[in-house]
Length: 378
Image (cartoon, rainbow, N blue to C red; front, side):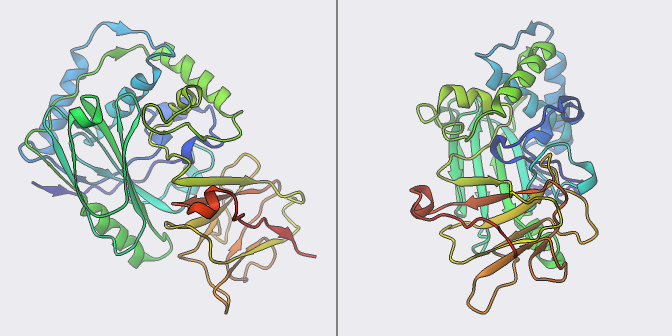
């Protein structure tokens, strides 16, 4: 077993379908990989090198000539296939491909990107079982999502250990795996630690197998992609959009299938908020303490189109790990105002913000705990 590392810029991630745009052309430039960014570096399979696996898998794509129309019935599987094809070309088949940086502010291709996690992703042929070893992160957030070719969630793990995927358990020949690792992008030492933990994700498999999918019709796929994205933006929440068979709302599941690898609502909560006086000059603040999450919470500010607004302060997000705390342990987040304040976030005209709650506890899920809203400073 080898462990190879690749250092390339990260792609974008929009959390679980929120505020997505229909910029399909830009996304297709990376074969739709940017929908939910998935990774750069690798742990390769035992008996095949990266180049051998990629060459063999790519050969399979050129052998298919009959075009298969994409319909509402097979769209989730077709979308999975396009995602997998892009990773075959990158060398992320039978091993992990790790994103080493957050998406550059001046190269955003999706709305509502996060600034909290790095991604490691790969696709696997389960003709032979594959065992993924997840490292001990010393309480750092690291989640692993496993979906099958129909995009149903088959595994969601946080703890270190060995996880074996078989075709019988996953339900399809191919599986997609996405790992999110927390990172403080402003701390070089923390970035190095996150990279090490990415590298320590390993894969063991007798043979990486081959990549064989239908020759999905691109035009019918793209038409459905745009239609589903347009309708999906009208949903007020994504409860029931991600999960296993019998756990999802069929309509929401189809709408969310444009962006695989989302979390069930029980695992992540996203709160989008638009302040009344979001003129960019009125300062706001909120103070929060003892948020009931087992993962972490974060706050990210966006412009009116839900994109990060480039600013000279490099002030886009705050989370409970990187925030400066008050004497009582609480965190005060300053939206606009004096940039020298602790936990300052730049607020452009028309700004809004997103609260992300990872691994929320019962108090959040049942509504007995309410994350405070930012208030204008008088």
